[in-house]
Image (cartoon, rainbow, N blue to C red):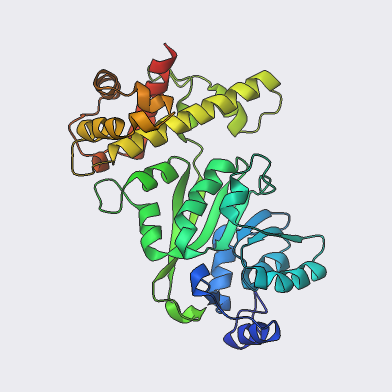
Length: 338
């Protein structure tokens, strides 16, 4: 008898698939986890406990879902595959106070201003591999309450998430994600733990929201770590006025947009110096974009922020650490405000 999920065996998984007349769909990257041991390791890595507000994307037949519910967590699942809804409806009937689900594309739901996912504090999921990287980043961008993510992804994607400067996997995606969340721990999962076995290697990765993300630079002047207004929002200090909170959100969005644009520009032509790559990015996009940051990036501005950040503009983009890009974004936003 499985310890963590009653569905985490090949036999039980086949039984569920047969009962509901289901087949795995390659187009949705469906590979059902059939190892209870892996389920247990996921729960421990995520530190799942009673009362956790957990978002699960791609629940499938509910193998991980059942384990989360048995750990007394509250689970909100988003499933794109219509044929799996009867399975999820039966789970909801058994856990009416703990579980609810939505039939939708998770990326579409995340893009809405009133997303029902916004209360989630943890993302725990065996993600659809084709969109896993985008989903993880969008969750940390869009869901301000989200504190951690423990996700099963393709090992190549995990390497990009965990990459260090001056490595082949370190790029724009790495910097964007690590500006928001830091990789803490991981473990590999062999193909034999799935039904059917995937043709790629898998990794479970735990990410923790970075308390020193891009927004912590807002309001800091000349290295003085004075109180940042944006920290009111990030730490949930609800004694702040509505005006302060609105300003915090604006600063957060501006800093994030600046960072993401600078990073995209720095890696636009990876083999070039970061200055030349950024200028090429601006030239390629300035006539087709309403992004004010792109319009403001010129040679003088680029050289100015790199000089203030004490970073050489003739280095390669992959040599600059995440903190360096955060500093460049802060200096750029401050320059725009002058």
